[in-house]
Structures are given as structure tokens and as C-alpha cells.
Length: 293
Image: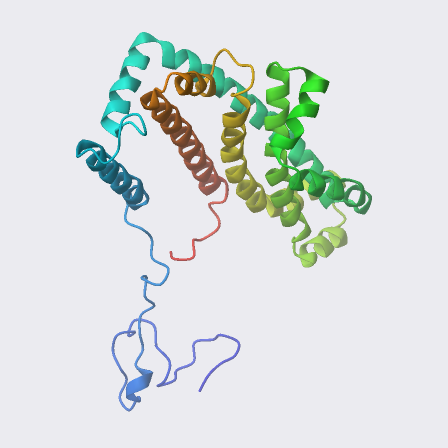
């Protein structure tokens, strides 16, 4: 006997609360109640996400130690670690790191603001969507590298050009995901808001903003890594400071240990930024239950 409304109706073929692991008398063998397994959607053990990178580093170090990898081809992780420490102690690494962080996060902030504003304009207005969405989709299809020649002609070859291109790259994932979340808001919520007669500002605060937050955070996670990948390319162009400049100079002298240090910094900053966004997302969207909770 089942109840389509989901009420607690006894049936010998349905698991009853508190007795999931005990078969009821007369129940068929194939109808024994089972507890939902956590393995299907189980979480990785704490720190399990680092297993792959750590394994790669160990294999890399072993290959370098036995001579399979030449230092001219790729420096060993231990060698890069010593080099990074020397650069940190001398102050060189801090100087170049701060220059890169300034470019990346300034471009990230501008790109997030622009992407969010465009998503709100396109997601809450048909005119806005008709005039904005196509342009953003075109920008999405054009890689950042293709825009560098025009950006140099328009903005010069200095810091403004680099920050502008980072912002334009960051803007796309913010817009795409926030706009999709806004368009996916349940129409029943919109109709309810209209029926109670709330103002447009109240609608933005009480309906649109909560509905757009999940998409915004998805876009932000993509954006924080996009800003660093764009920076890698842009710091190869007419720079005298920054992690990219340090790596470019090391390439000219065949210093693969410094190149590995630069790559490790980019990877750490990208991963750290993503973890920070995920932490913020969990705090802001704490009302949502995880699938495997």
C-alpha cells in the first residue's frame, strides 16, 4: 500500500523509519529495506583532492633523481623548492608576486562588476537581453589572444591594457552563469511577487538576488581561475615585473627551476582563490543542503 502524497503509511514492502536494516515478516527477499549508500555520491576524504598532485610530484622527483628527467628539460621539485626559497629570502619573489596579484585582482574586480551589471540588465529586461546577450556571446567566442593587437592600439602596451583584457575575460563567465540563473528563477516566485505588489527594488533584493546567487558563485569560481590564466599570457608582453616576467626571463637563460616556481605560484593562487570562493559560497548559500548530506 503506497501513498502518492508522501504520508507515513505502513506497507510491508516499504522501509519504515527506525527499522531500515530489519526485514519485516513476510517481505520478499528482494524487497529488503536498505539504507541509502553514501558511496554513490560519497565525499572524498579530507585532503583527498591533493592525492593526485602529491603523487605526480613524487613520481616527478623520482624520475629526476634517477636521471630520467634532465634539469635542462625540467627541474626537480626539490630544486625548484630551494630556488623559490632563495628568491623569497632575497625579496625578488615578493616584488614580482605583488605586481602580478595587483593586475589579477584589479582585473577580476572590474570584470565581476561589469559582468554582474550586464547579467542583471539582460536577465531582468527583454530589451537588455536583446541588446547585450549577443555581444557577450560574440566576446565569449573570441579568445583573449586575438584581442591583444587591438587592445595595444587602443590602450597602449602598459598596465591599462593588461587589466582591461583580464576584466574582459573575467566578465564572460560571470555574465553567462548569473544570467542563466536569473532566467531560471521559478515563475511562481515572480507571480507571487507581482501579486503582493512589491516594488522593483524589493523584487531585486528578495527574489532576483537569491535566485541569481548560485549562478553567480559558479561564474565566480570560473572567473578567479580565468584571471590568472589570462595574466600568464599578458605578462609575457612588455613587462618589467610580475611572475610572468620572471618566467620569461628564466626561459631566456634556460632556468627551468624558476619556471617551475612560477608555475607553482600560479597554480597555488588559482587553487587558493577557488577555495576562498567555495568557502564564501558555503556561507552565503548555507540554506542549501548538499546532495550527500
